[in-house]
Length: 501
Image 1 (tube, rainbow, N blue to C red):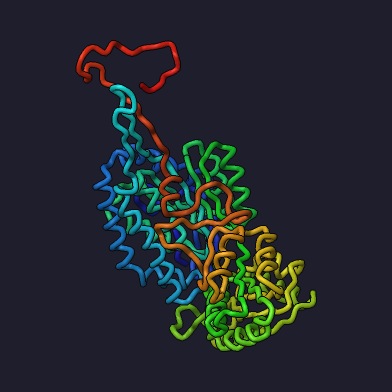
Image 2 (cartoon, rainbow, N blue to C red; image 1 turned 30 degrees about the vertical axis):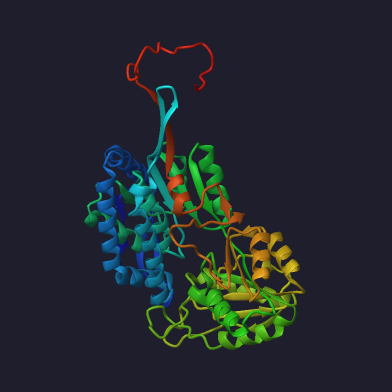
């Protein structure tokens, strides 16, 4: 049985802990490998390596840092198919979706290649007589990323390229369910010429997370996962004086107006709800059908959902793979059943699906539930599976109120042909990312990614300019050089508060 090891100070290591976790292939239901689980000793070793590497990397020129980032970009592009296969084997998503994940991560690497321009400071000449003021940004130190199972490559790639390009060192704690892609990325960093200790990978569960949160030498923590854990990480790390961005859960709504192109909306709802088996924080899990749009929309979505080809992610004929674990499958099936028990209409039931040759896989079929009320468990819970609930409202105002009443505020979308309705919607909803006829509005790397309300704890989003701001802090210098002015000036010293003249 292959054992996935930690990566500390530029090399694989087993560390001292003997704890391990099983890693499954979700399509077969069979254990594929084991992964080491870190305790305090392994985390301390990674922190020490990152701390030792920080002074040298922070002082490395922006030109040299950028050369390493460019080299890393080319290596990730070279190994995109290798990474996609690792992701599909451990997560279950289809290969084309896994390749798309790698590409979206690469876009942030490419954004980080422009760091010399992004880190340019400001300068003001002669703000007072003989006095100049300028500002620049410096790295924080050792940064940590705690990332989820559903994007083994993309979410880490949204964090550490910017952290490293700005001069920080980094410790990645990936999900123990999908550990292999993180280690491969570490090896690519070494091949790209990144100094040992600048990037480290520590596998683990809660003890490893707590050790990172409590370490006095970790300056910042980035997290993506469920809302309860995001809240916990934000509170615990903030209490230690760390900078924290913790992205939590979601309940993303897509509103469909009667004037929308019905076929277009149905196609995109199906892709957004059932792609990656619904295991995306930006998946559409609630369709809000307005007025006369409802019946025809449900019929169109149901027709398409029944035709989705479900199978192993490595099969090129599959459109949707399994969910990540048997426990996830059982939880999703229970929530589907609760919807029916509480009075919703189970239009398409994905429970009990059997994939030939993969009878032990963790499969749930596409599921469509109509007549869902906001007090139902299937609406209130973040299902994180291939389940689309349809909520009916009379008008756009009611739909906006419904979205704003939900505790989550990650993403939302509106399908319409009306510019007036779109403008009213995008200004009215209390959500961080909005799509107009775009169901999964994940911004490109030069914009920030993040939600509102219980979908984000902290004041900075991921990547884009906010990512650069998160991983750096500002210095402002006010300078004067006596003797540089022509004529007698005196020292200018005074007991009064300084002012400009």
